[in-house]
Length: 484
Image 1 (cartoon, helix red, strand yellow):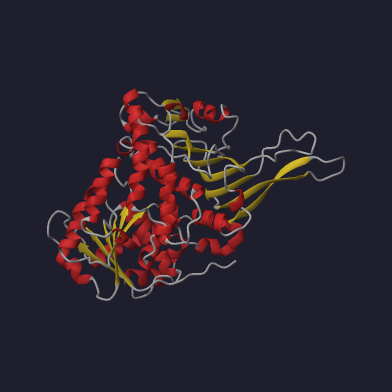
Image 2: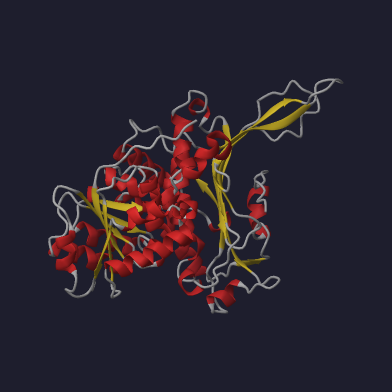
């Protein structure tokens, strides 16, 4: 299998916040790798903009260091690095003043695709949008990319959308969620809608339940102050897990196109039932060996913010009636793992004796680590002595399927930035989708705040609070193991 690279048209990309952490770790190295892969044309221009007092040479030195640290082996090719650095220019910019905006406009070339990446905090989005529009830097053909968080609740999300829409049309706004750029997330749609095998079984009649897990081994150390204002519900469930849920549960779109796909995702969010407090488990990691607790990292001994959440979610439509979706995410867990597991029902009648230990067919879409797809099936155990059943995985990892090509597969940010240049919004969230997600999440958070309850403590390096195990045990089910 050979990965095919389709070049994009020439473009001018402005990165506002170009000396920040996200640009240094992800955006600039990602653009460099796309250039090395032949997807980014030699005539492309990347304009860095930040408040730092740098010239073009200083910015290129900054980017050169970033490539050495984050671009991997591709940065060892000095000729490619030099070629990429020649594409870079820099403008010192005052977001709240007039300094730099005229110069920024002068660097844009006519008859090119123009895109602006807001690699800054959401509090600056509105002001930047107004400055770009007011100084004539953007027009009706320009595109802007904005990072999450898209608001703190429904009210702030609506206000943020209103600020952006005052200067740009919805088709110009690309709300980026890097989870949607992962190869396996897109493969979920290919598996569902590109094969006659799965879609007829993808419903409550054949699916017992769905598990979506995003487990992390890291703590919130170093960013506890920020994280404590959001928590796992706002930081992960409202966006990342919500998107995985939508792609797993949505109806087949009429075509693979931006609005067709996003219309179906929106229907899923609007079909979500309210979640009862008994169907949610919140946790906070305790102190462990050589590791401080969550409240120490948050620097607030009275913190009621969750670092772990597990919940049972129901989609109130014909396809999924009576089939629960179990969502789980947390910090300082046993292993790093992101997956969607479709657990199918057992056959209605077994003809085999001693078949009571079977666990059923499971389709697992692994996002990380080792991206791939696994299907667990039941077969006869090899050897004589009667019919004994065992389970085996049909396993496809991208590392095995692509071989050496896996090293040049674009990561999520690379793929999504190229989609912006193409003008393809399929993998980006629409404004009404963001607001619908907050409208579902807000009452859950408000119920916690009214109750004043604290998250349940859990040991670091495990699978989360014991209460989360009971969430499934009471339904006669079990969480899939989080492996180290």
